[in-house]
Amino acid sequence: SMALTGVGLTFPIVTFIMAFTALFGNGGVPLFSIERGAGNAEKASRILGNSFALLIVSSVVLTVGGYLFMRPILFAFGASEASFVYAREYLNIYLTGTLFSMIATGMNGYINAQGFPRVGMYTIVLGAVCNVVLDPIFIFSLKMGVSGAALATVISQAVSAFWVMHFLTGKKMP
Image (cartoon, rainbow, N blue to C red; front, side, top):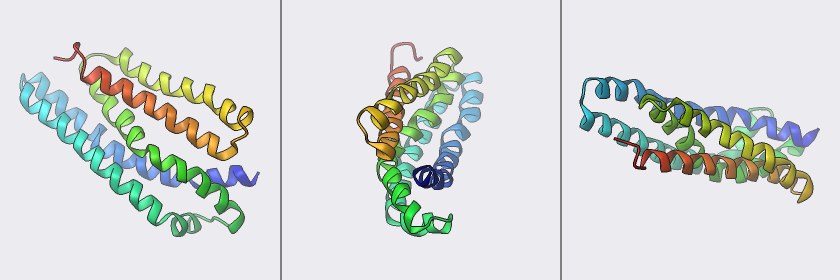
């Protein structure tokens, strides 16, 4: 139960990261769609590029900030010395995947905006299935516990991020 408490303490941090993902990734999608609809492919491309750059920069800032201020943030959210151990264990691994998480989620909307909602759905399903398969392997079979859960999440996010980037840079894109 203490491990679950520790992991639960990380959710506000994960939500904070997702807020920046929505701001810089999903926030640009309507502008991108408007420009594509108006036939301004170059401007649409700049919007996509700016969103991508902002996702990268913010992921680096959030990752570094997360590592630097992990302890005070977790204690502000109610961690005890006992639960902090598990929260730190999870976040030490999870934060390494911040870039993957932000790219997968933030850039996925650009796939949908170009008329490929099924591919966008596959991004989410791919990450979810990977996580569901890898969690019990890492947590129980490899006896990694909380670290295994975090590693499964990071690997799943990386798979989704590579899927998104492969599609967005592929031949199907105009």
